[in-house]
Image (cartoon, rainbow, N blue to C red; front, side, top):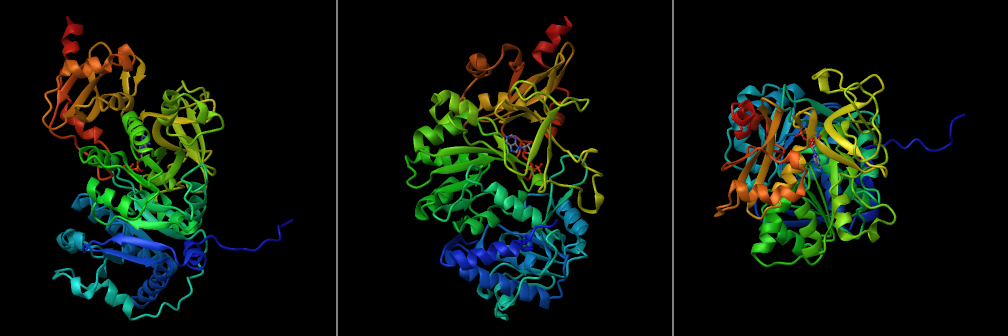
Length: 547
Ligand code: ADP
């Protein structure tokens, strides 16, 4: 017997319908790429996104067509997402930090028909347009007055494009399982792989990721998504903030400590989300300039492990609650968030911080398990660690055009490539990426744990740990450090700082100082490049073992 409830398709356009009717007066504030602060309301954004949809139809865009966006978090980028999905086309976010060849690969692999581009990134596209045969035109996200002189073929001014339309438009009634967004994973090995979100997966994920015990945004919140829309679906915030009716504060191109601080204070931001590097910049700005935070209550931190000192500083010095989060492009992207279960609020401060270092509990719609190398499930005791597998309606089923093969096992579990523990209460903690874990004498050492301890040293600006070949132990950890400016810290000082914080046999065998640590386009430490750079590095302990 079938239920007797309405068939209300889960389309992302419904999110903006709701923002318009229930929260039409709520503000969206943007630091524009051109410079000034721009403000308007959800009602304004709604009408303009419909104009984008009308303009796309006039340009000949059809259901299922891919439209690239190479843009910062701004109101125009937001309108574009809703306009694109509103005609049944697919927004394809392009990460400007990718190398030119990678951009050429993903734009041509996705067969983007048009690309919406910010002024900042016009030169990138000018440099590669000869290789982008599929692209019919470039919509420059600005007004007539700021249109640049450009060699881009068929360059269209965004404001000019939408001004021809009246916004009287019904979203296309596509199937809720139709493609809606496309984002390529950085692909540290092989070609980037396209993760193709559907309307349904985006809407379900929006609801799940914004539960009260997850990101928990409300209409009374002012939300600053520093996480870019071009990386990992902006952690759903482009959908979940409008669904909740929260004020949206879009940071545009400026992610430095001072710019973020200015927005946090001027717009009385209560919730924000970003990767640890952004928070490091903000914390140093606050410390160097003796600033306080008057409205910020909560920050979500993920993308890489959140170091202990970051949780401590936010909480103790600024009264801001840290929510550690984990996920990946293939998971839309949120998998877990670390919020407390009953009783934990009474735990001693130190124990609470240890718990917050964990990446957290699975949100509803995410199933999670850990297995050994033979696929046998491991216990949830907080000690056993193994491959982290996930399953759910907003988790990848296959990559775009089959690139990268079938990512699922026979029971539809997706291997995240991470190694983790899960404790008795369901809190997951990442030990490492499986290819980064250090295998020493048959045991595993977590490079993440060592890095977290090392960056706690006040003279360490950044730290990376890799496994280096060792004649006796297979691999031993090498700590690579970027010193804080002007510091004269030594290897022995760092190692002695780490002594009582980690197991003795985890202690790095050596420390090297470098000027810079390489990063991927999504801001993660490029371990593969470091492993190559130090592939013939001889540890001092290697010669001792050989003697
Ligand atoms: P990429 O395209 O670089 O893979 P993702 O954002 O999809 O970009 O990266 C996902 C990976 O980032 C995860 O599989 C995990 O290894 C790492 N990661 C994400 N959040 C955390 C976290 N809170 N702690 C540790 N690692 C994390």
